[in-house]
Amino acid sequence: MIKACIFDLDGVIVDTARYHFIAWKALADELGFEFTEKDNERLKGVSRMTSLDILLEIGGLNFPREKKEELAKRKNEHYRSFILKMTPDEILPGATEFIKELKEKEIRIALGSASKNAMTILDRLQLTSWFDAVIDGTKVSKAKPDPEVFLKGAKALDIAPEKCVVFEDAEAGVEAAIAGGMKCVGIGTPEVLGKANLVVAGLHEMNFEKLSRL
Image (cartoon, rainbow, N blue to C red; front, top):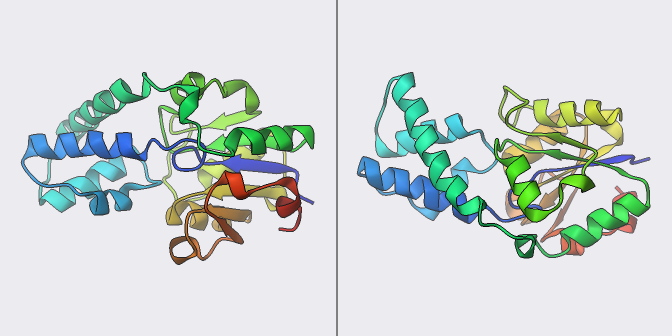
């Protein structure tokens, strides 16, 4: 029986992907190379420093660690300038309703995100109080597809992994859920997220009945 749901943030509850893209593109522009939306797909679900490594690989650049930390900080400053203006209107369709239904059914809820800005975003969306636990980029050291973020979420909820369902929009996140011994609902398309137990276009297509059948 499913007792807990662990949600990724970006692309599942809110779409901050466009803010990430604009921020990474601004950095690439400063460094003198083109960064496209297709390139940005490679950055979904991975940590900031891993994303930076991919960005620099695309640009054919390599820098010492100190310089890379400076670049990552600059990107984050671009990104935070956008998310600090976010409002609850930016919550993706169906997310609030589904989470509310889970709370009514006494399903435990956690956030499992690589983002170090997750708490800022939840606060801006006025969603913080809905989560029983928040595991974000400040609490993990391994990027998805390593299952660390989800296993820590299950532990924080005191629920066995096999009784948890993860909601993810990135292939690396689906792989992380499976590696952690959890069921997974992919948010997106079967072509990308085919390894998930169920794929839906968004949380507006989810309800407790569908969850129970997993």
